[in-house]
Length: 159
Image 1 (cartoon, helix red, strand yellow):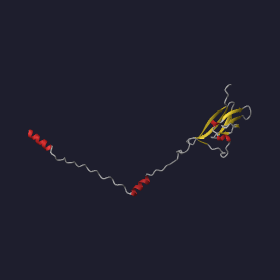
Image 2: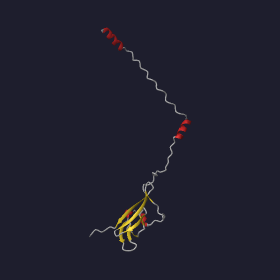
Image 3: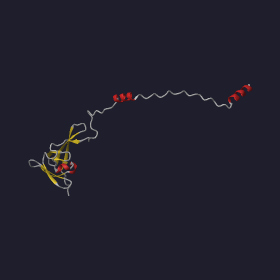
Image 4: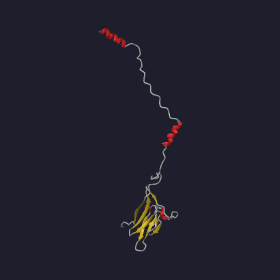
């Protein structure tokens, strides 16, 4: 039995290199379709942008409605409402008046209906300690939206 085992070991340890197994050949890559059929498929699958019911991505989310007198701009329309301060209010007369001061210190007398601010806001009320301004915007969806801004008269702190 030892002879059989030694013969099997001798045959298994022979110096011959193992025979490599052949790998299965891969199928050839599919051939590209002809140029004419590629053009036909591109023409049928071409994308076209339809802007209906979509907003312009390059427009501001908030824009103002243009005034009828767009070419005429008063000095008060050059400043934002946050830059203007209410200095005085005369409300016992008809119509009530207010004094608005710009950042340079120049004063302007306004009444109800005066257009103020960069967003063409209109003064809708002058009360005893505040001026109410209504601004109209067009939102991103094209709807008109209004915003009421209260500009308060600064009260002096005792002293």
